Image (cartoon, rainbow, N blue to C red; front, side, top):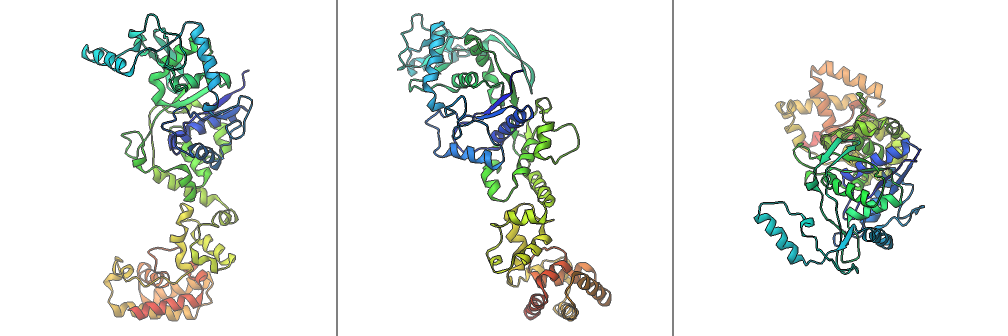
Length: 475
């Protein structure tokens, strides 16, 4: 059997968006599942749109997600080079093959002449087709003018591994440019040459290329190439599900997600689940399970909605599944600055408290800062509390003084604190939402916190009593 070889072939024109990552991920999963090869190729023939550093960014993004490629621009391989700008002599060889077989010709027209053809077609209310204006005796191609494909218009029906049976009429076929006058090939030509040279068996790409596929099929035939298996990915839609996802919809650069403390495994899981599932209710997959279960046949044909809230939930689930040791190792760069003055044991105790609530690692300072520094008294935490704001200042003072006396007698173990707080609850006749909220606000100055007894035990007696005293003074 032919070894499975998939490729990811982005243009280095900006950061790697979610749709591109999904294409790369599915190509990676398919290759790994079949003990095949996953190839990275950078299609850098559009020099006007190329962004400096974008190629390195693409490679960094794939590696950050654990999508290691077997061949690529920085590691080489049997079909190097993997940068299109370094393959120009090879495209000229392929172009010459088409010229020799009568399937390519030099384009003699100026841009103004082509525009005149286009305007005439519009005036006649007909689609513009370049093939209707083929020159009878084109000049010999010397590279100074574009080289065009001499198409053979016909209807096509083809099978797409995701979209199923597709078809197009002869009107979809035209004489497109193969080589530009700057010496670079067009995408329509170069990717077919490269896929053939690199023995690619499966071409996975976005929905925007469906309209061009009949031209690709025509070119495969002209070059006498066996076409690879084609698989078209549906669009990833914005949060409202009405249009294709864009930067304005809030989707970030994948490395920004990594920097914010989203776990690579969670990102991979989330991206895989946009438009694919294994037919079960399972939502959390290891990379091994994704490799085992993935199939192009289970990629949905409709667009998949980008839901960042679901990503937050999924990342939180992955964080909760880590051992405390694993999570502690990952959090090294995310602690608030004040945490540097505290021991590792203290930080581990804090982390153990917030692990259940942590959705991404950059959230750590917001959730833990009160463990490391005395936050300023915030009157709005009481004034804005649904039940505490109903109490008079004297009632608040009385409750806090009772809590202060209770905590002064405590051993400050979680068990002892919980027992004493429960006892105070009975004696004061207050609801937990009143008493416990007041003590929590006084000792943390935070709108929310982990369990009260657990938080107090980590803070320690001296800190807790000092903060209650400060709150009493402010009242």
